[in-house]
Image (cartoon, rainbow, N blue to C red; front, side):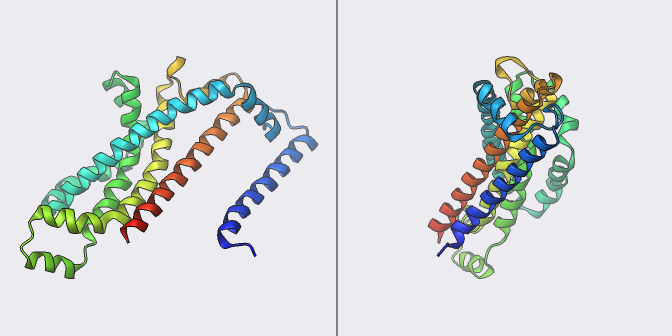
Length: 254
């Protein structure tokens, strides 16, 4: 008998195979040119032909992604810890956190790239700005969601602010923090791609976004789709890794 886990894995794979088969059949039967809509087989050939250069670009993009994720997590947690200390601090700083989130990164990325002369550092800053808000909001919500009875128990025993933070607030905030981390993982990749599009850096330090731009200029659409495929796979792997880390952390917490 098929388990629910096997079914949840088999169902999307089966649907994906059906979609790819229909896509391939439509491209072949209607003779659609590759520069308009490449078939999956054409995308696969482009991936095999330029796989090394695309993988090199993917590694550069992932370096920016992981660096941005680290900055977003550390900065987001520190800001959340600061906001939860006092309602006055939260009222003063929270509007700026919201402004940072609602401002499109495409609008401020050129300014960041101009101000920060080191291109990888500028790209990291742009991607971190995209990913930091869910870490701040989820961690802050988790730090607030303390059991009132436990808080009263700690206060009755005259626990210090640091003891309340380390022994009560942080354990209570862990589920919300892990949820924010899972969201921030995908946003870090999105932010890295967007920042690379804006920067348009080439050469050996070029990421996948530049490869997409270059393929578009050269009308090499199968290669463009191959780069998009690698981005999609990388995003799925990052999401699965974050979800596994969340399950591991919460299982050992309970």
